[in-house]
Image 1 (cartoon, rainbow, N blue to C red):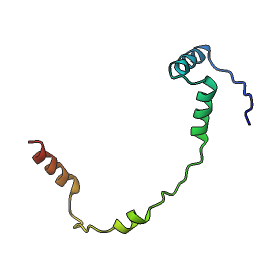
Image 2: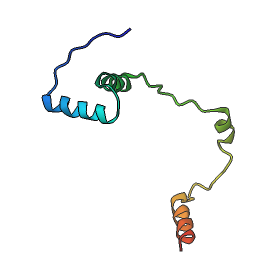
Image 3: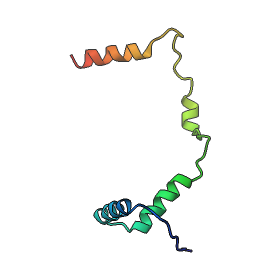
Image 4: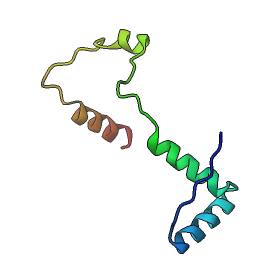
Length: 81
């Protein structure tokens, strides 16, 4: 069900928004609706870990003092010599 909403905005904002909507071939109403939908969407806090990712967790064991950033930097240095 759609309902009408009246809002007050600065004239220059409305003009720019109309121009943007025209260029992107979208109605101003749809643009506002999409924005409001995105900022009010209930986001799931917990990221679900799939069984595949779960099964791969802990497959590689590295020493605590292993510097993976330094190792990767060395790899890239060698690769792009």
